Image (cartoon, rainbow, N blue to C red):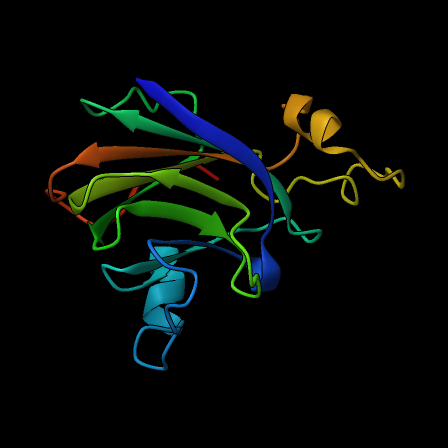
Length: 166
């Protein structure tokens, strides 16, 4: 497993965006509807939208490149997605960002992306906390909603939620 990096992400409109270009447009046909909301994801192979739950929309995200399917036993929710990389970049950000929150080099090609989340719906607000956390503080907080994104070469055998423990 290779750690590609991490970042604090403001998940505007309760969603993380994974793409290969920040300039890609979210069109009506790939945006959220009732079926996609049930699946926990929207988008297409070039722009992935993954639903989040915590009201403050402030999450820590770690991104890894893997050779094999990771062990997901420690995660509450895991979503498997198909990602076609055309630019040689992987970007994780908010849908309202003009600049990527996180960006790394990734060879062009077809990938399976696993988005694994923990502490769904838990944030400072739900814990009764009012102080603002620095990036270093939010990175260390294991008790609030956070995500690990695993990127593996090759198309997925299935897409959608593969684990969902509420």
